[in-house]
Image 1 (cartoon, rainbow, N blue to C red):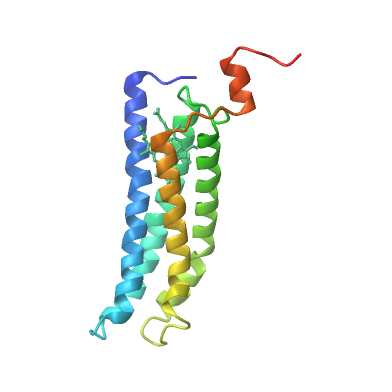
Image 2: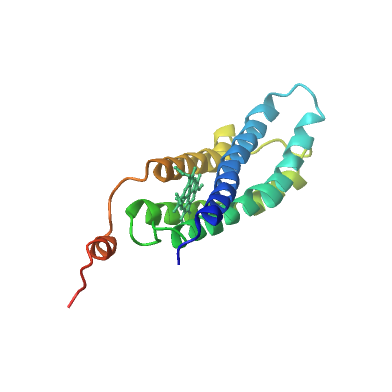
Length: 167
Ligand code: HEM
């Protein structure tokens, strides 16, 4: 089930746009969390916390699912396959983990947004940065894997490539 060259280019463009866009949105999220407590403007603080929720719900989560889905299409629809190369399997697993961790954070961001301006931040700033920075590092690892594509076949990939079959 291999895509035609023009379809592959189109699908790859969509995959890169949503996946790298996801990384860009995480940078924006981190910037809001880091810059807001330092703001001198009393209105900026609640406004910024409120902004985090739509960024999470309507940007980060849709991009995470889009990256996962288009990544699957790229794997299944090209010679790379989903289970032939370790870099594809690791990308798939890391992206699933990053998406699950993202989903677990929706509730705490909603609480932060609804309490915006009424209560000061509980705990030190780094607590709020742990998940986005951890997630960013995971996504950068996936990005590097996808660009470098280390030539390391799985046993299944090796058998397929060398035309061998188990008796
Ligand atoms: C944050 C997550 C991801 C990022 C940032 C990302 C980024 C990229 C980039 C930049 C490329 C283009 C590389 C090149 O052409 O040299 C690419 C290609 C590719 N990605 Fe991803 N990706 C992500 C997730 C995934 C996932 C989850 C999968 C598999 C399930 C996947 C499978 C692939 C495959 C198979 C290609 C090669 C397509 C081809 O050359 O025909 N990616 N990815």
